[in-house]
Image (cartoon, one colour):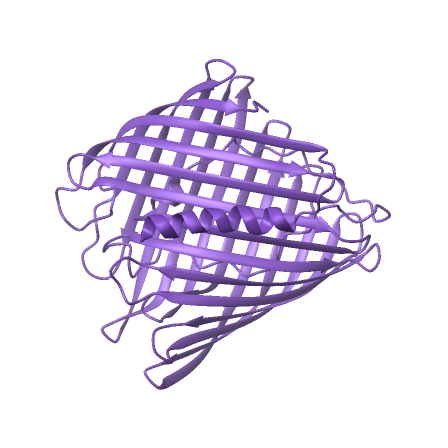
Length: 416
């Protein structure tokens, strides 16, 4: 059943968006497949409560990308597939992440965009992977108010998606799947104003469970560019989750947004407002209000990129809860020289107000990942990966998972 659904999702990701791209001459495209083999050791890969969870592992992964761009459109298809074998306890465990996205400049003022994705995770491990090349964009540059609108749509203003790590499930089987899609339109009637409307849906489901649920999101936003360095705006999102039976949760978050170029290489984005939350479970309804916040500060240089971020928002769980989730993290990538690079990602997430047996409890999840890559020749790369994950909660906590591995990666297709 899982394999048939997996194949249908691949066809959906590729077929829907490829078919939506206009048949015009391609101006640029990129296609490659990375094959990676690694061996390593993990102290608690499933964040299990048992004492004998440590295991060596062998891992094989494939990451493929096909993207193309024309004068008016851009499309990207990617697929990451991984199998890890833990001989001491878990056997074979698979992760995958399939994505397809496309944008099209319909006119000088209108852009449309959309995307679909399908992922499978085990114990929250997908969030510790560095997939693809280190992304080091050029330094930020001032925006020219007289410039024509961009040929690709801005990022959708959907609220943060349901976090892949669900604290109700992480210390149990740790296995979940997620199918999601979104589409939207961006309208720029003049040089300074931008209107964006987007809608999306996420389906989360779990093996051998009746706790699957679907989330629907609708978001609209307006932004006005006040100067070369500053934009202000408003956005509002509505998110509803439907559970088995008539249970549901709803959140509405109006926010003020700001985007600023602080210096030649520094930029900042923030959205702050309030969230109204409603939880309707077993015929009982309760309402609450909270802070909605999403902010980041980034520095982009020729050879490195740094981003720090904080967020506070509402998150659904399989227990029909609507948690107040607070998170902070950093992402850093550095090109050391022409043959080597380094990546680091760290985050801390606090899940507040989770209901367990009619009690309100709090969970904390910490994760850090790092990777060093060294190019041996044009197609062969070697390196080391490391990660650490920690879950704390009311009651017994699983042991911290510390994982380290060495890898070799070979690239087929385009090198750059």
